[in-house]
Image 1 (cartoon, rainbow, N blue to C red):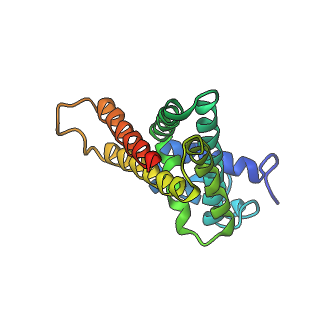
Image 2 (image 1 turned 120 degrees about the horizontal axis):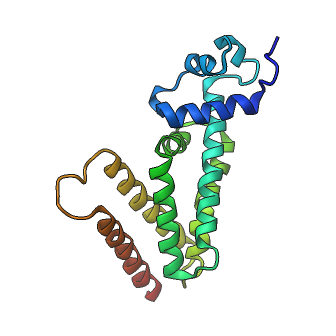
Length: 190
């Protein structure tokens, strides 16, 4: 019999908290059960598998990232919006690195809902890029480039790769976004 007050959402919420505290790679159903003071088997009354739980956590993380991005670009246009979106994405990933790792793990699943949810991450960027004189294909290429810059920067910094030079990391990030915008403006003129 399921424990009173324990339901799918409370299990997901506890998993989110535990993943942020202990790390995505260190998460286990056993530790989650300990946190909720139930037997591990009891969790399966509420979620089918650990993969299902990761999907739920991933959907939550995607929704939060989208919310942060949309809020950041509200009232901004063009370059200002690109800067706002990039910094919001970067800040979210730094503050919620373990949830960000869950988001990155989702494309490896074969779940159609994941592909739909991924659109929630792309939507704010596509909205900003639509303010430029670009066709849809160019916008798609540029959103991939911007995601690559953001993810590359975030993953390299998290791995400690930027500690070897006496250059401010935030200056490097600004420079990366400026280079992206220079390329975008060049493409806009074609």
